[in-house]
Image (cartoon, rainbow, N blue to C red; front, side, top):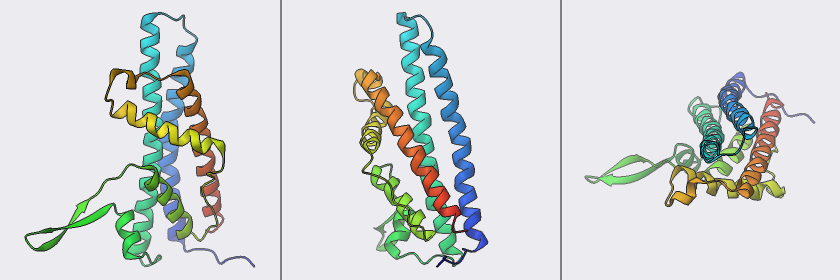
Amino acid sequence: MDQPRLPQQFLGALLRVRSISTVLLADIWRSHESVMRHSALEATDETKEYGQFLLRSYVRAFFAHVEGVCYAMRESLLELHEQGFLNLSPSEYCLLAEARYALDGGKPKQIMARSSSLDTMRFSFSQFAQGFGSRFTLNTSDHRWQAFQESWKLRHSVTHPKLVDDLYLSPNSIRQFGDAIGWFSEQMAHLLRASLDRT
């Protein structure tokens, strides 16, 4: 038996996520094109250094996409909750809002708890699917999930380097990064399709 369609506000939430994804995907595509054009150049010390810059930019663009769509998912779910279309538990609400609480002069005070982790990404996907009543789950049995996890470490190396060597991408890390992009893109497409089917 088919499930009833969700209210129009869910379609709005879905379109918000898709719109942000579309803009950030264009950035990834531009980075990819730059890397590909550069790879055709003759290898000199100068072109190798510039190639590493382009690869680091590619990694940053991809993870801006990952974090941007996950943030949009969380914000959309919070809005649906505030509008009365979802009933989030207090813990779900706090995690989606990236909030924690501390005492300030004997009174509770909300503190933003920005998190950029794999757990946050997984939580964003599972809550979005759950909020839409979809059966979607991240495919973590795909070998590319491991590549995504390794690329997450690469992201940290590129954005928070401890050593100069952290800024240079090896051929192996580049291959894994390609698999990570493929895995995440596929998961996003499946999640959006499963969510759209409910609206």
